[in-house]
Amino acid sequence: MSILKVENINKSFKTLQVLQNVSLEVQPGERHVIIGPNGAGKTTLFNCITNVLPIDSGKIFLEGQEISNMPSSKLVHLGMSRTFQKNNLFGNLTVEENLHLALTATKRYRYQMFHALTKHIDLKKETDEILAQWEISTRRNVKVNNLSYGEQRLLEILLAMASKPKILLLDEPTSGMSPAETAQTAEMIQKLPRTVSILIIEHDMDVVFSIADRITVLHHGEVILSGTPEEVRNNEEVRKIYFGGGAKAHA
Ligand SMILES: Nc1ncnc2c1ncn2[C@@H]1O[C@H](COP(=O)(O)OP(=O)(O)OP(=O)(O)O)[C@@H](O)[C@H]1O
Image (cartoon, rainbow, N blue to C red; front, side, top):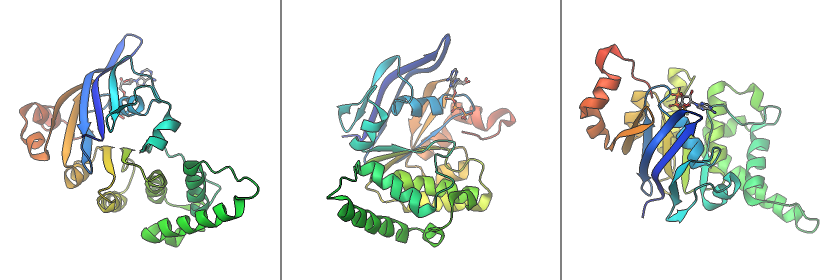
């Protein structure tokens, strides 16, 4: 069974139809990349999947359970986590404090009187364990505002992973990054365990082809093709959009 199934969804903003009968499936463990020119509807699709925006019609399933129009907070508890194009970090808190907060939110800790201390110790242990796995652990006591832009975006992925999601949605994780930061991010994504499926909007074609098992191409709100990297690379229509007429390759 697929982890995520999007079935014929439509979304309009007033008279502008942004998504037209969009369908796609993400299989367990798959790295599925969404590409498409500016304004193709990629972020809107993410916003519809995570119910930041309501869909007009169609259905969305997470592991076979219909989640269309389900509140975002509930989706996190069902195993869906996401990052945004702009980061959602607390700039005046440290790396460790941000992670601690993300874990707290995930577990719906209430800090009730008698359980607070044990829960706090468990949480501290989990924070340490997660940090130890990633290079950013050396920056654990640094305020987020003092991290580089690339480090902030990597931390965002780490926080989205704190809820141990079944599927992680990454919206342009490398946008605005230097080539070195982009390479580091691609490497981090490659290192994420296959227990998590990943749906990514990405514009850097080197990153796309280095991580994708499957690629869905959106153009004017419609899926042109969903296939293997090889199929996408060799598709005439995709070539025209991206590589024909001197067009710049951009997701
Ligand atoms: N809240 C909104 N209200 C009205 N129009 C919107 C809204 N959000 C997006 N749009 C329009 O919908 C279309 C698709 O936008 P979207 O951001 O989904 O595209 P995208 O593929 O993610 O583009 P980009 O690569 O530039 O991020 C665009 O024409 C955009 O102007």
